[in-house]
Length: 185
Ligand code: GLN
Image 1: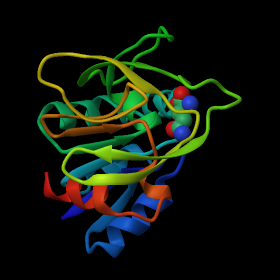
Image 2: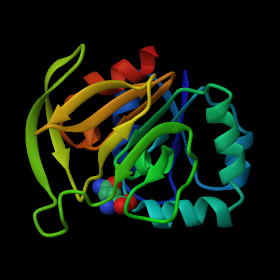
Image 3: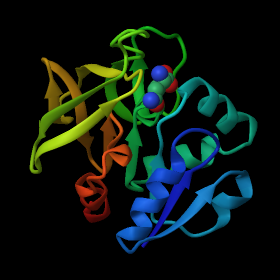
């Protein structure tokens, strides 16, 4: 299994280390020619969605990756990665891949108190340590989207077909169960 990790900005190294430890091969996707290499799965890390979205377009990577997701390549989007996948962003006029039929709110917990830890339940996994960093939450989902976790009544993890979208950063908590779950999709 080869996992392609978007590596133009943000917390991509942490994902890479975890997947390697779990026995997967990884490649960093930094420029258009990296997309010619073989990979089976895609990771969109946390960081700054506006910067990542702009770089994806400027580097000519956006349409190729969108097509791969639409064709069914499993994708894990964490935090900014979730924002890139979302069909709508309620507090921003921009949108990116639009492959995940949810509406997200960026920086939904406010900028000052935006970072916190929460031990919350994830469907199928049980209690999981969640790191939120200027995180979005999911305001609305459409019919087929499965809710995997909610924190204080707000949806923070969803699954839709082969797309996994998380508000928080599972790569920063030392618990690899979400990465394992993604490898099994
Ligand atoms: N606030 C960032 C954004 O809007 C996301 C933060 C993160 O990925 N930790 O893109």
